[in-house]
Picture (cartoon, rainbow, N blue to C red):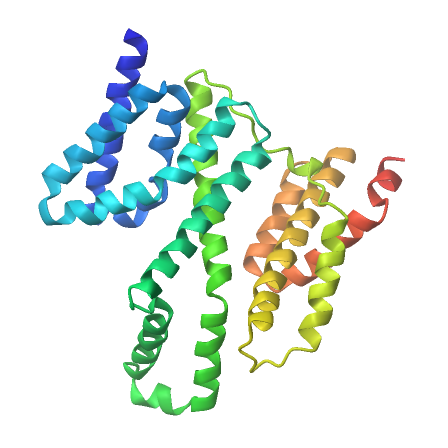
Length: 303
């Protein structure tokens, strides 16, 4: 019990200082770590001690930050549920896929619930985003604004609005994967075993994803670029997600080949670097990923 109390005190201090950093310029870096201490505390401490530690942290920050306390408290509470969901899976020693999926879905659900509540309150956040984009364009030098056709600007703004679901999904997954990576590393150093992601060379997407990819690609051919329907939003958000999934499958294939041929790890890493520097390669990578899932390429390499 004394050991748990000491851990609770240490993480209470760490989390308090992390939240206090949100009233400083460090916010641009520390905001991405907001779930990590909570995830570690929930996984390593018993429930009563976790609740006490968390409550003391947020109460201290609220008392010390004055008018800034309320936004920090809301932000902390917003990221609390996905950390608890992930920590619950960790405690059960469930597969890491379950923890990542649970955390991402929980965070995404909160984003969507926030939109629903905002609309119910008459705030219309998406309209505000659209107004912000137009005001940002209008603030550009007149020479730049006049060089672009207004119809093209309107189309670009509408495309951005259409991609808001993709932005929310990407943001949710990013926070979860960062929290898992850092949290797992810290907890392993502290002696807590947390399941990790499979090695890159073992990545295999279900074959059903190929059919989803094919269906979405076909639908994309028949949807007008100017369409603002729910179906168009669904297709244009799902297509880049599936494209990236199969690009990651291709990267896993690179690691598999390097392992099978006993090549240095720098070879697949160069493949990742090429994708970062020349992002249009993502389409070529996704095709390779699809072939890797559908065809027995790996058996031929090892055979």
